[in-house]
Amino acid sequence: MVRLLFQLILGIYILAALCGFKKKGWLKVLLGIGLIIQTIGLILISFAAGHPPFTNLYESLLFLSWLVLLVWILGLRRYQWEDLGSWAAILSSAGIIYSLTFSWKAQPLMPALQSPWLHIHVSSCFLAYALFGLAAVSGLIYLVRPGEKLARMNLTLIRLGFPLLSFGIINGAIWAYSAWGRYWGWDPKEVWALISWLFYLGILHSRFLGVGKKGTAILSIIGFLLILFTFLGVNLLLSGLHSYA
Image 1 (tube, one colour):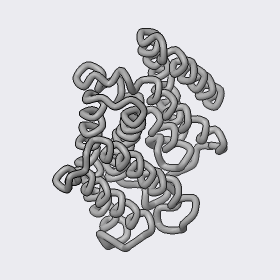
Image 2 (image 1 turned 180 degrees about the vertical axis):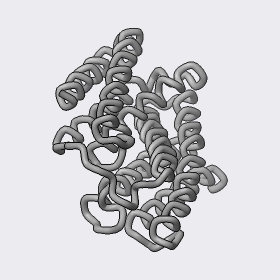
Image 3 (image 1 turned 90 degrees about the vertical axis):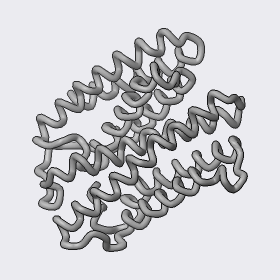
Image 4 (image 1 turned 90 degrees about the horizontal axis):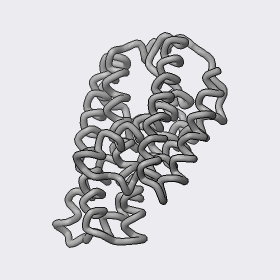
């Protein structure tokens, strides 16, 4: 049932993306409907599993795809992110498509995950990932059709995401100490999280080195590729204490 529900959501998001390139009104309506249904789907997964829907790769992809659109909708009024709507739908659709390649069944949490830090750490990091994903999208659009609004949007998204990533790494270190008795252990995921953090720190300071709006746009795309490797590549290619996430 849950799988069919997310297939329906995928169809709505793809339709929204196609409509959004011409009819912004329909885009908002369809994404609003899709987001409500996806919220219900994540709640169903949470009840079935007995824990938040981000403890394995299948759940995490669905949760992250939901966050991308939630962030976009919440930022519409204040930041005027209408231009990102179709691309946000495409980004979320990609996450759902990848999640559907996995099978899922309710499983109890591993001992290391049975901590209140799970909610804080994953939520803050994934919010940062969602913002960085939208930043990469705005950067890509800027390269195709440059504009001051897109340049501001690109930098704003990075500025919003960076403190969340910083907070996620800090509370992740605290969680690591409570779970494994150390704050930092040079686990592959910890290393790549640090690399990503340093890269975005560099982006925020790149203006002082003469990097322009186009350069920032390009760096935002590269940065999100680093985030994707930290989130997916490390899990799939490297073994470590975070391999289950």
